[in-house]
Length: 484
Image (cartoon, rainbow, N blue to C red; front, side):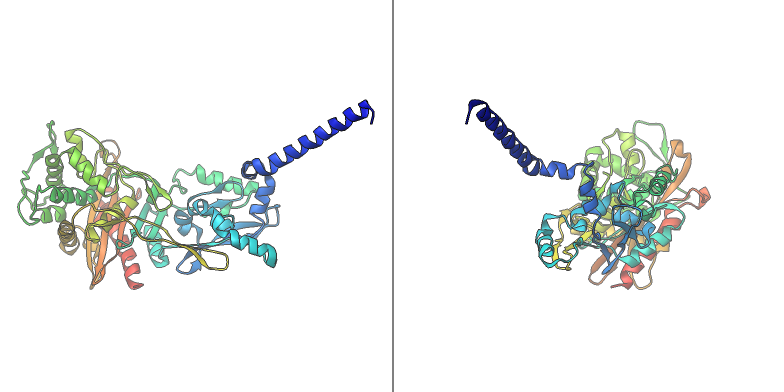
């Protein structure tokens, strides 16, 4: 071979080698990066080429898949009663990705999870159409329906938990939305989503997990727990050192009670029964900000909660003496999600043990084999069993003969606490109505509930935790009890 031909041959060999190196680099080194690239339409087409697995409640799917005719994405997501279940499932959209369980469990639902590698490999040999796996939730369908129906046209939220396991039984938020209306990728879907995003009532906001409210008098349960745990008081029927009127520390302002109620030196039981601001405000001041923060932290405040869906952190703040006194009655900068207040009620009901809230009970392969089962986990011990039982007595008095009688269930022991939280500058807006509660049976408490209602249409004088929120909590508790 002459010299020019040899040079050409070597050059061509180098080109072939460079091509091989480049091909292997793309196929192996950058494979994951390219597969995950949002502009790789082949990946998206494959993602929607088969039916998505389902989210299961009470053994039945609340989701499904339908074939599309106007897109190269073959299947899109649909929901059964989407507005009721959206706060649990989130959405899954061909154009706008996914949220909540639909997002966090996407690998199982699409079938792309490493846990389903064997099933994907087997389908290649059997020729069966690939499908996603299922996510089995802890939700109680009857309780969820009771919560959603109870809220009705009012803004608000409900969270219900099994105190003994941490299983989330209901998670409702209103107003809500139907995720099916923007599950595709057409202009119609885009317009529907934009309409929801610009709605002043924020139907896509999950108020049970992502909205924090002043908890109002429901927080007095936490303040009572702090007083007992720190030895400020030990006997719930003994008089407290609570003058009337009581002046806020470092201030000329007097803390007011609602109505003509017996709050001067009232015992813990009577103070919770009638929701005495003066007693619990002074109690918070006597304990001090650090001890109040410590107690709130044990109930889950000041950190995000994962169910696995993230819930915003509820806040008991570092503050000065007057503000700490107000935070002790659930006002000032004290903020809580409905889930957080359900956690408070559940820890009291479970003799002081707070269980980690969770919504996913199992994951299933496409052939329904169980590939994951949740194991319950204790999150903390906010108070001793002895003190928890004292707070139970107090909360049960509230329902038996106090501000929470609307939550009574015949033949069942119910504990609760009402709350009417001030809202707006100088309480200029209509207040929020709260109720937290639990129901007790011979084998312990199977359900704890928190309800918050933002009823802008109600007369201001008609807004109360006992009037608006307690009946909703009662219906949710009854739904769980009737299923036992």
